[in-house]
Length: 268
Image (cartoon, rainbow, N blue to C red; front, side, top):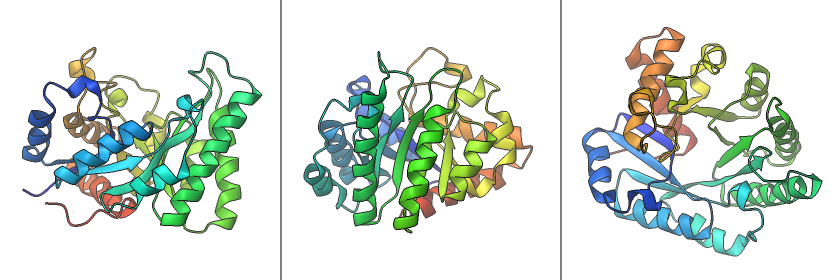
């Protein structure tokens, strides 16, 4: 069956799917949804790879989430995972100034240090990054720091690229990241929150991806319930509605964007 959608960021290796994982994966295939399963540490990255190796329409990303910065980033461990063909990205990695109980310079510096290791690994094996960036409340501080880090890295590593997952910044931040060769992706939060409409309307369609971040942030018609990659259909439909563009035009473009960024082979 030909795939029509790519959920660029999901976590179906998490325990929330332990009882119905196989059923869900089969439904994804039936409903033409491919998925990139994203690791947040070595264990979940390994689990993502196992699933990706087992199912043709699944792929994996391997990395250490910034909120796990107290864990060591073992480059050798992640390199061994990253070289598998079904691993299509490095991450999720990045900067989170919102969730840590205490955000101080030591925390920020540790996150930046680990992000730099992800950048170097991604460049070494020539795969894109999956970046998590969440600013502190009422600011865009994490995005501003991220942009500076990526600008500096881009001068040295011309092949640096990736996706900014669950984008919550403004047009200025979006344009700066797109200028650096990154896409921005949106989740089902856009089905019930209007904070993202202006960015979605104004950035190039060629720079947009769709994701679910499942099991988190279910769409409006399933608020409060466990999310899953099938909701990527709702995300794409809402992007088309917000941009006032034909659904098939938007679906086809976003699908092509994901295939291009992650170098996905011809999907089944």
